[in-house]
Image (tube, rainbow, N blue to C red; front, side, top):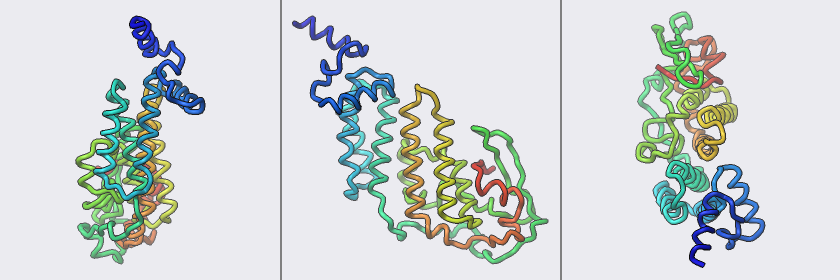
Length: 291
């Protein structure tokens, strides 16, 4: 009997055994979902059962109960330690990321008081100033930084909206997510999404329409996920990346009104801030890096 048990475990590890040998706690519908996990992530039925358990258990963090960022992170990690033992650490991190972001997303609350104003840029002091386009120059300094995105720099005598770009959010928070969280939590892909954040900044600054800017932002992040994590081997990474894209999209959708309604520059197309051709035609809708 002892040898039969050892054989069953060994077979399960290589997915040669029926699901009920290690997943007999599940009903037929759950077994179908587990088989989908086996196919999608190329893991054994035993491991797939553990992943199913983890994702099902961590749904309790996504009930909008007001959990903090730290509580989401701690809860997801503790459940992973209990249920994802034996899973490849990199893949386990991907599922922790999915859990964390779903938890954070479900607990986002529309409270504009949490959206601090960024008053560090001197554009705030001269929002009505109309600098001549002839004295502005936005130039490409690198044709292909990553994933084919270009890098731009303000080189003219007068600044443009490009100088207002500060990446993924203001100094005190990043689209509703505190800077402290971003610095301390390696799960968030802010550097990966940087080109999309830059585009979103320009789109907001030049007042292209909040919903249009937010939708472009989400589409750009999804596109980056598909470029950064392509192929079968990166399925879990791709999924975790897209859950993060949804978090960032919902954050700007909920918290971004104050940022959009700010008046940092003169948006008239006859003025340098938004009237320079490359900004008006390209950077309001194309992800890019800022030098």
